[in-house]
Length: 262
Image (cartoon, rainbow, N blue to C red; front, top):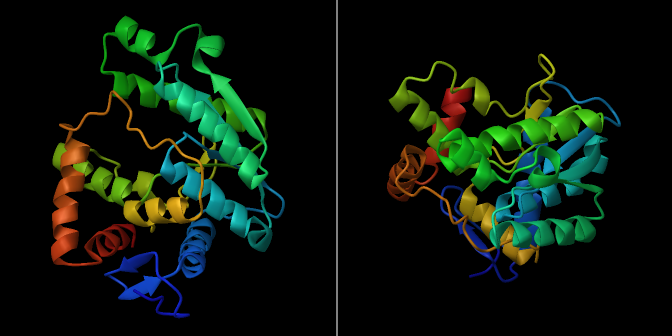
């Protein structure tokens, strides 16, 4: 398969766009999506700082890489932060890949170790709170990421949530009657009540696109899944449902999310 734009070997075929793209043109295509995401929503001033959360996974690696590509064009500064959750084996690998990624992209990296900051890891926290580990993990990460972004003077905290994640979150919101699921899908928001505004650069980038980009860019990331991932959860089921619709109607997820955000 050849690239639709230059004739070189393609690394991906985007059914919804009817495009086969080589690595360079995939990068160009995704970078434009990221530029659009950054420009949408609350404005970011010249030389303001965006801190990108790098978990060690493919999505945050892709987000950090693409933001690094467009930062000069959009005239913002970029740094990164990693939260070490203390999950035996898994967190060590995530921390190592976050360090390698920061080195590859020449990004400043702050590492916050949950055990050092709060005195316990995420497994111990879930046990003490008697709550599901994923719930506790999300709460602690949000707190520490906001703290880190605040201390560095950042105006935005970027995360690696992709199109698939956000579309599934919206479906879950409808099914559970959450009052404000849509507001959390906005590309980025300003700082409110001490909470640093969020930026989702991959809001229009699918999970598979992010994976192919990370692999073809040779970005370091942990290929293993979190040992505590809940494959029976509602969001995971929503992703499966959306994947079936996407298979039948290429571009459905993107159209669905865009429709919600109008």
